Image: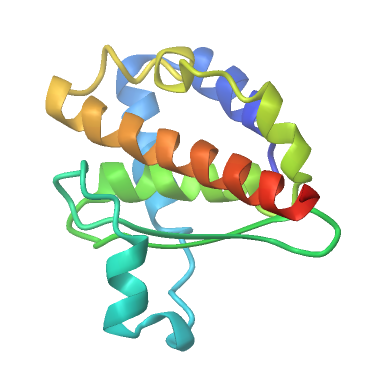
Length: 144
């Protein structure tokens, strides 16, 4: 699976239109949500409220400290869905400690800040911040 740095290089070498096309392609790669996460109470806890599209993230660390990410984003929001798929591919199975090297300005490094509107950027930034914060929280709990 590509790392976050791989995605940054790939997106950074593409023009604006190609970046958006890559997000659309990634949106098709987001796997379906496991049935056990479909419960309404679990969904509400996983919601990213700052995002206009309904985005749900489930983040787990296994006993070896590896990240496992499940997500649900409607197909009607392909840009958001593609970004979440990118995050899932970049972080899935990686050691939680790798989160400390994740750049805070990921959207800028991917070249998406120029390609998307301000409202969409705010939503994607909220998704990314939530992912980083939740992984850091779980790492701290695991170490305690």
